[in-house]
Length: 57
Image (cartoon, rainbow, N blue to C red; front, side, top):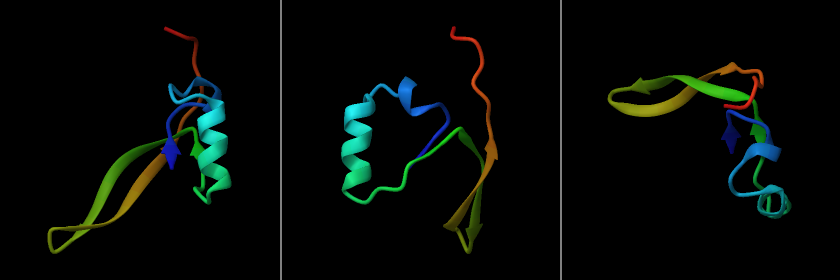
C-alpha cells in the first residue's frame, strides 16, 4: 500500500493500518504516483516520486 501522506494522517487511522500490516500488507508512505507504465495496453508498473509533509490545509 502506497500512501502520499504519513500514516498518522490517513483517514483509516493508525489502528487499521497496523492491522493490515500485521496481515502482511507492506505499507509505504510519502510517495505519490507519477506514471503508469504499460505494455500492450496493460499496466505493468507504477513510477513514484517521494513527497514531503507540508503544513496542514
